[in-house]
Length: 184
Ligand code: GNR
Ligand code: NI
Image (cartoon, rainbow, N blue to C red; front, side, top):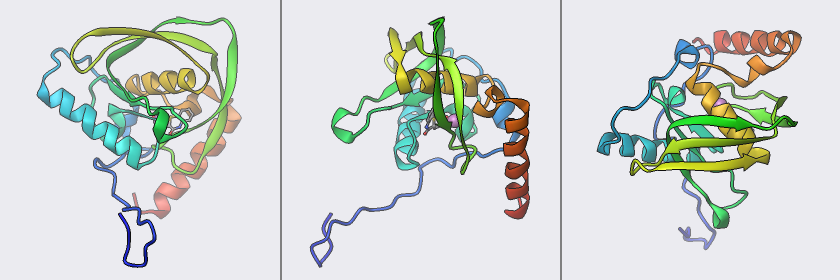
């Protein structure tokens, strides 16, 4: 869109679905497997993708939008030209590498905090796509960290749980302090 002055105008949209933040207990609950991939599930995956892109984030799990079903969306592409949206139903990690990698992680549900997290460097995952077809793929680099981070969410686990107790407590204290001052 161009403004009357000829400048590009980027319409700032609100995320479609509200993103749940810590310390909301839904982030600590385990999401249930999807038993039937119907139109409502496909709509939720599309709404989650839109919410993720608008946030912006590289992944989003259903718990983060207050829904306890095993749905994940992710797109770790560096720019729009390479966009690769994955919409996953019941994703599972099937193999992990012995080698681990340390990457800086953040979470849309813990805004304002990042930390380096050690995880297996490469994983293979299996899931159902929106049409119900089984998919399997290997992930490395940021994608490997992201899919592990998202499946953790479905199990009620947050990236801070992978840190030393000292670091986790430090972040948690600040998170609770901010939540209190925001009146929630
Ligand atoms: O946007 C996100 N960035 C990110 C960076 C490194 C590892 C994982 C992530 S996922 C995160 C979005 C989010 O909170 N997903 O649950
Ligand atoms: Ni997250």
